[in-house]
Length: 342
Length: 273
Image (cartoon, rainbow over all chains, first blue to last red; front, side, top):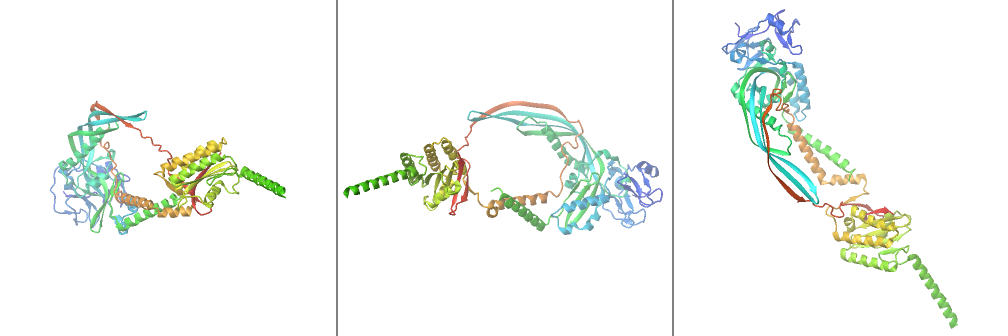
């Protein structure tokens, strides 16, 4: 059995890839289109419940060339024949994802989003905005741990109501002090935590949220036509990140129930988590990494919703020019407008 | 011959007397600082006012003038008041400090012209207050009371001096002049600098992206429940503070100024009665 999977068109045998707009599989050669059910009939789902040995190198099924892939890359393309190649060992056993949100945005849409975004970065250097960069936008299934848990927490502290009134030539300020306690329970579902060391946690957090209504049971078929990474952050490492997020959510939730006071302060708090479950999921992103003067600048699009995050280098020259323009405009408005009123 | 001479002398004296009486009838009683062309004030009243005016001059170094007339030589009350002050040598010190109350019976208008230090002491608000008092008596044809009220006001405002928030506003400068003032104004540069720095910082740091999830994004619908919810009263305290009266008499620091035909700067204001 081959260690690399390549999905072929049942009609013509060309590489069959997932097509985001139709959410089906399309052969670009003979234009045949297959829904998930139709495709499943032709190509049975491989269960891959057992761990498979990770090999040093993989060979492309179509042309026999060696695939160039990082340790964590689990779906890629053959650099010679451009066929989609899925490395089975990296989707099997402990690396077998439970769920996937398929791409909804095409690469062209992603390019368009990037080009709109980069044009609005007025402080980015001109060289950075060059057109050829756009073609390097890559669709990647990124590994995420989706955590669900029960929480029980409390906050307590002191609250104040302030009442003022006037009597004669005196102003009275009455302050009433209260002690408050709020204890509550909540269930949190599918909190995503980035499971790839390659991808920046902060940016991955900013492309949230994903719409879980479109989540599917995992199938390698969705990987066809995209890159994919396997996790290299274990669930228990990711759990600490999730815990601090849930503690924050719960505290805010409890705080939102402290109403009717002019001000309050929390003196003590505690949030306990139980029934923590982690589920391994592949979520779609478009990624573009631009190198500029030795530094990586990341641009990420949520492959489902189109939400954008990214950073660009800042050109000090452009900053100064921008500052001067604002200065000049404000000054002109202040001088000519202000002169109407003095 | 002697008899004839006596008769001529008597006639002459009588003539001179009649002439003088006639003169007084028109000019009435006037002094250096109280010019009553219409004879509304008695001699003793003029002398009393003049006495008060001289004390103000000694104490506060302010020249005070009252002019009552029905002939402003075709000038507006403002121009007549300004010119009367400028061309009759009034004013104390190098900046000709002083003020003039013109009671213009032709247009039934009272106008106060201020000059030098008096521009700063008598802000628009204060002039308005004085005119309130003066016009009240003028409309009752109580000219002496109007003058006394004026003098008393001058005394009390001169005594309290220039209000701390006083500033001059030249009402006659054209737009170009005001633009020039704004160009020279330091705060404009500070404001523009602060805004441009803030705008640059905002644009620099806002380029990355925003977190759009909140504490309820991953909360399962309806799963949140308060299991304990207590609010207990501890204590209370009441503080009493005296309300400071904010009216400090006069108020409003603006002194509007303009230039008279002599080129000197005046302040002032008028009121119909």
